[in-house]
Amino acid sequence: MDIESLLVSFCLLSAFITYGLGLFVYAKNQKSLVNRLFLALMLAATYWAIGEFLIWDATGYENMKFWLKVSSFWILVPVLTVHFMLAYTKSPISERKNLKYLLLFLYLPAFVFAIIEIFSDNVLTISYIPNFGYAYSPSNGNIIYQLEAFYDLLLMLFAIVLSLSSWVRSVYRNRQQSNLVSAGLIIVIAFGSLSGVILPAYGIYIPNLVFIGIVFFSLIITYAILRYGLFTLSPESAARNIMRTMPDGLIIASMNGVIRNTNHASSEIFKRPENELKGLTLPELIPEPVYTNLTKALFGKGMITDSEAVLQGCDYTVISIAGSVVKDPEGIPAGIVLIIRNITNRKRGERALQVANEKISLLSRLTRHDINNQVTAIHGYLILMKENGVSEKVSQYISSCIDLISKIDLHLKFAREYESIGSHQPVWKSLDGMITAAIKELPETKVRIDLLISDVCIYTDPLFEKVIYNLLENALRHGESLKIIQISTIVKTEGDLMLTVKDDGVGIRYDHKELIFSQGFGKNTGLGLSISREILRVTGISINENGVPGEGAKFDILIPAISWRYCEQI
Image (cartoon, rainbow, N blue to C red; front, side, top):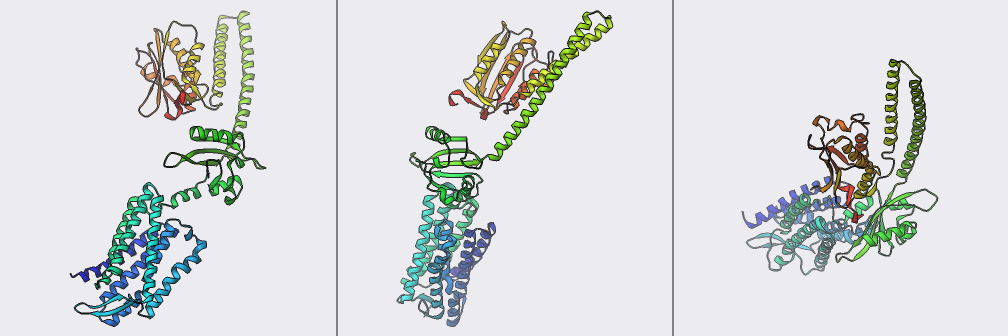
């Protein structure tokens, strides 16, 4: 195969590749302007490649001239390249409102040059070259050709500038996308320059090499799609798309609190148009003292989470604010980013739930109080009956009734304690402080209690102290030969904290290890460990018994990584 045939085959190969690639990208997102423009660009490249193939496949002057005229709209390829790059880089020029300017300054000159090519030989001419045959060449001395070449050069340079500027501004995956797109464009332009400028200057006339560049460009674009998600996550659109579609309000402000950018959700939360929000200051939106506390946290710690505020105005709107200070590449604070969430409905729901819980709790307390009074009265009458003298059999019945009343009283006590579980918000509390307080509540004992714990704080139900008390009290009550209780902590590899309460008593049988956490099981009331597990579950903390029978009980309390901190961090 000679060099001419090889180059002509590249035209046909380019046509097939660009056509398929354009349809593939368009199918990924038919609503995207970037994807639609890329399809148009690839179809134009396909049209140009087929035209070039037919030109060099033609025999005779008239046939070559016909296909040369048919291919006159090849200039749409660089025009669509620029339009695609404008949309790809999210340039304001590509916005719909500027379409008339694009048609006037971008597309109209291209159509004018194409029409001139069709009806004249001022741009390209066909000549016979000995030992080669017919070939077309640029009309170098013609002013029309010079204007078109200059226009085409400007288009290509502009496309490269857009691509490189996008590469400079982007990071990580987006930079890789821009890097590949820029490389592809440069390759196409380099091959095009060879055929359009360099080789004709030396009298070398061969099929257009630009299609070799287009094949490489298509392969590079395909790699960028598969490896870096090109046309799925474009460099300049990612952040804007996130801002536009995120349900929470986003505010970007300077360090002095002047708002520089917002999204649509912010407009809905603050009941102001987006263009009015820009230029306002944060104190105009966020009431005191929330704003002062917010700035102190931001400038002190660099971030803030879940700071609530009620917006001023006739509508009751509650917002939750999270944010951080953004630093430039040199580490200097450059601005503030705030995430605003409208939690009005959540707060209303919480209030309704709180009222319902208060009503249920009140009803429970009143009912329990009335039952307790009646049970106390019955207990008193039974004691009087027994003291006034009855038969031995009746006395046994009365004793059984008194025992049942005692159990009813224990159940009422359990209901009272169970009711308080989860009724208060979890809080950060010192583990050492809670253990110390629990030890003080224990009866005097000769059993030694060793503390081997870190200085940590736990985010838990305020009743956590009662859990520790129940474990220690159970050990003293049921340990029999008990001499030492050891309370220790260890940080596991997953980041969780293991709190262990271990004794050297008789331990717990293997078949009783889960039963001890059931209500009603046990030698005493059977309520302590059942309540303890429920208290811990409020904040996702688990408890299990892993001791060896005969060697002592061992309760392991697993505290998730998110529920504990070293106290100095709180």
